[in-house]
Length: 170
Image 1 (cartoon, one colour):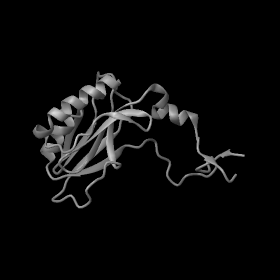
Image 2 (cartoon, helix red, strand yellow):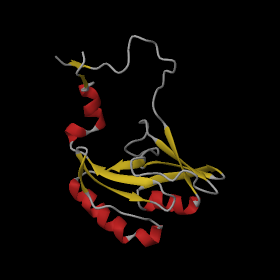
Image 3 (cartoon, helix red, strand yellow):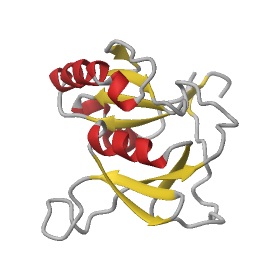
Image 4 (spheres, rainbow, N blue to C red):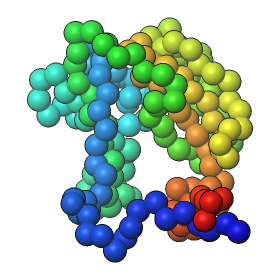
């Protein structure tokens, strides 16, 4: 007999009661180059609130734009003298696009722009973990995924289904 494994006891009051996940951080040896890549390659909106830092988010949140007032995520880029812990592909950031064709077009354009943006390896698009995507690495060893997921595989849909992990020992 199998039972759905409960990962967290929801009857326990959590120590922290977050309202959203807001930020992740990556490091770069060249903020100007990294910001240019985030804006021109990934299509993100960036601001520099203080020296040695820029923040990036999806476009469309300024007053009058479609996403204004909705929660959004932020990536924080910090200037570093060296990259002490080079990232691996499995430790990547990612963006969603609207279709499989958009993944293919993005791949073609990113691959053609490797030298211009100081990018390293650009992998070919393929199906993996239920999506169609490709990965590329920037000059600071940060990996990026450009991904398309069908509606039944979006994170909101997966979350709505609840736990699907089965404990064989139950």
